[in-house]
Every structure is written in C-alpha cells, then in structure tokens.
Image 1 (cartoon, helix red, strand yellow):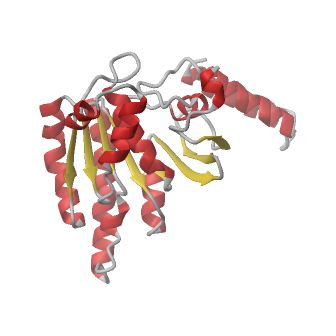
Image 2 (cartoon, rainbow, N blue to C red; image 1 turned 30 degrees about the horizontal axis):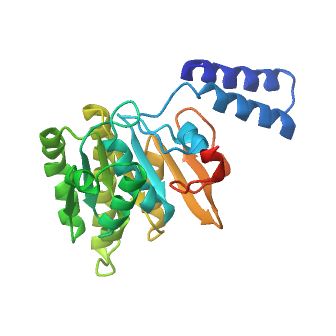
Image 3 (cartoon, rainbow, N blue to C red; image 1 turned 60 degrees about the vertical axis):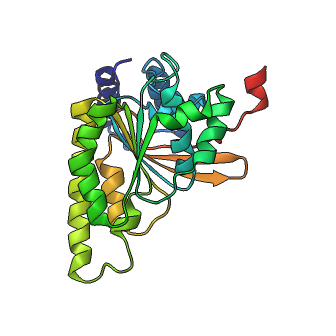
Length: 266
C-alpha cells in the first residue's frame, strides 16, 4: 500500500463514517485500521536497520528525512545507528557519520562495543565518525548552519546526529529577553536541518535526552518528518510516535535496541 493509497484508505473510512451518521467506531475497527496501515508500510524498508523489526517498521529511517527522538534511550540508539550506518550495503549505508555533540555525551566505548557486536573493527568505525562539540547555543547554531553542509560534502556523510540539542539553548544563564532570542534561533535551526536533510538526501537525527523547555520540545517534535518519544521500562522500551507522515500516533513497547533476545539466536 502506497502512502497515497493509505491516505485514500483513511479518507474513505472517515467519509463512510460520516455518511452513516455515526461518530463512533469500535475499538476492534480502530485496531484493524491501524494494523492495516502498519502492514501496508512493511515494504518501505529503512535505509538503516536497527534490528528491531517493529522499530524499523515504525520509524522507517531513510535518507532525506529529519528525525527527532526524545528520551534517554535515544542516546544509545544514536550510537548504534553510527555503527549501523558504516556497515556495507544493503545492511547499512557504507558511509561516514557526522556527530555534532551538543550535549557533550559522545561515548567511544559504547561505539566500540556496538562495533564488536557487529564484527567490525572498532578503530575503523571510530575513524569514520567525525565529531564536533559546541559549548554555547551560538556556537552550535553556527556549526550546524554554516559548517555542517560543507563537512557533509567533504566526507560524503549519509548520517548526521545532533545530540541532546536543547541543552545549550536552555542554559540556566540564558535569561530575560535572551530566552526568547534562543527560542527563535532554535526554531530557525530546526527548520534549517529539516531542509538540509531533504536537499542533501541524508538522514539527520536529533536527540533530546530530557525535557528542559516544553516549547522547544514541541517545536522539534512537530517540525521533524518523524518524531517519537522513548522511555525505558524494565527490559523494554516504550515508544510513542508523535509525528509520522504515514501512520497515526501510537504507543507501543519494543525490545531495547541493541539488546539481543533469545529469539534472535533461533
């Protein structure tokens, strides 16, 4: 089922509901519609697989998309994607990665562990990840808007990760009129990243590890092509889709990305 067909599917069902004069459907009918949409997008494979079938199917991480993930689990997921992107095609992108460390959270040990799990040389993987750090939101804005595009071209990067983006824009020292200024610059930067992902046909992933400013959180999640919230609950991760071009908002639980379950050995 194509995106256009899915939209027609939704319009048809809404129209049918209106024609019959009913404002309600059963929970079973809602379940069938949602499952039908998800199954219809199974053929839209991700350019980068996370090896969690349900997560791959829902997020659909593809080049040309701007993706925003909120929550602590997004950090390790970003490390995993760094390694996955370096894998040869069709498993990965066989490309360099740019990691803009807005939250000062990059962990080479986590990268090395993921590399070993995927039978890659950790040193080779780390050599293909290009990192830059910022210490103020002005530095981060300049780095993303002025230096990132040319750096992407230099290394032919296919994945860009911006870690914990809101941290610098929510510095406690930013007060008064400067807070509004930071908010406006943040919004312009987010819009720039979305346009850059489309223009350069790369996957740009922005993470936020915690809520610091509700308006910034909402601006980021609503501006992305795909956005979701992640929360670890025991041995599972709770996934809440906020924005998606093809599927409705939904909430589900998935195995923690990167954690090998018994089923994967069978």
